[in-house]
Length: 385
Image (cartoon, rainbow, N blue to C red; front, side):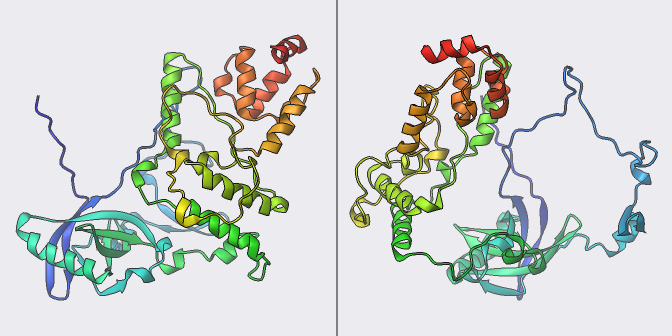
């Protein structure tokens, strides 16, 4: 059987020009989403739920052709704009991406870049002029800036060369980029005191956890878990839930945490997953020999799960002292114990041992509530098991 490969369709065709040089081109989507899509279904049925355009006052459905746009001046007061009025001032569709200047890429902050498109020559006969522009731009490390319109919107665009191909990056205009000092609360003051010892330890930790950029090692693990959940529910299987997020670092013990992190990074091949698990073993070694023992870790939090599907230990993200304290508390619990100190994974294990129904779909609070409403006899039996 012959496998047929689908040919990508361009989303825009036109001409790329700079000076008197022009080359017919086509734009192609550079990325695609692999997120899981769901339909809206009425609970207890297989009936789809659809959205309708309704009049807010009367509740009656409104035909699409009867809908116009309104710009709100004050509450309940609008300036009405008809579709043909917008069409008259619409930028339409550009036929040319005209580069009006070249900028050093090192001067452009990443926040300005938005969506990426691949640029290809429209035909084989344009390959030479395409290659000329691509190689000259890559050697100069500059991006061409242009304004062009597509799908009824005008874009600031950076055309750059990398890896033997031209690409177009739509960009945000300056007034679309927010000032972080005005938007973000609780930012530290510039004169906030940080000790040289703390700074040195943090820098050392960053150096020891340095990795090479290998994008294939990073995956959308949430979408994978969603697919696993859907598959398991379709097959009638229970789903193992993971522990909750790691707790925030106590700033009072910041230096101690840094030292434990340094020790773990210098001894563990996967510091991202095991940094706190072995953090209290032995005494901190101080400044590690980063040149000899530099840890080239991979992003273990995003690696493919190990075969066998074993559930991750709930102690991997907690210091040994916290684990010991939890253990001693567990040994001294009474039948009226407070389950609030347990992680979601621990609650789920108890719910599994007690065969509580629907536990795989419960949140942490729901698991705790279900356990608290089991009989004391069953809970005592679980602790003695």
